[in-house]
Amino acid sequence: MFKILNSSTKTYFIIEKVNSFINYLCVLILILGLAFSLFWSPIDYIQGNSVRIMYVHVPAAWISLACFGVMGFFSILNFIFKTKTFGLISKSLAPLGFMFCIIAIVTGSLWGQPTWGTWWVWDARLTSMIILGIFYFIYIMSWKLISNKKIANNSSSIIAIIGLINLPIIKFSVDWWATLHQTSSIKILSSNTMHYSMLIPLLIMFLGLSLYSLAIFFMKYKIEIIKLKNERLDKI
Image (cartoon, rainbow, N blue to C red; front, top):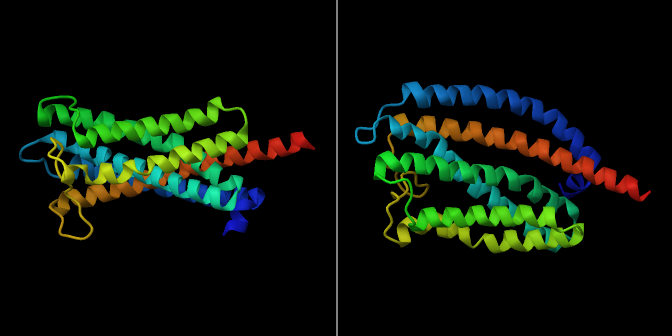
């Protein structure tokens, strides 16, 4: 696997073959997910139609957490194996994760106003999500502002690794502290409190947005491969 990742030419052609299929599948699943979310899923008896914001808010939050988790993992591998590939994977994921982090915060605010009666509160979950956004921003800026690629790679990797500490805080914040944000309705190790009529559309939207994320990541990673090739040609 590492040999394939380190071979930019092979990786580029593999991405070209896979990406078109992912694009078509992503569109189909998102159409299905939006149809379920907007028309076929029931109205919440307390929140009314505002509950439909959940179908974007929750997947966006999950994807932003997942992206940063993968960035941190590959940043650790970057220090272990000393290869540019892992840094480029993290670099390609960062703008995507940052975008979904912003979407999660904005949709959460839109959902919070009719549900809680306020656009924003500085409780543990919301504050830790803001901190995640700050880590994303600092990571992206480290690549843009540091001209030396090796230093930028190492600096951004350190930022991503430190930022991993925030992920369990986000996850368990509603359990560790008394917050306005509701506790998790979907649990892997115990029974879910969400009805299947809402859970199924939510999972379909998560799958569709995950495929969208994968397609965008591949596009961004292809750009990074092209940049890397151009740098190598300039040195010849």
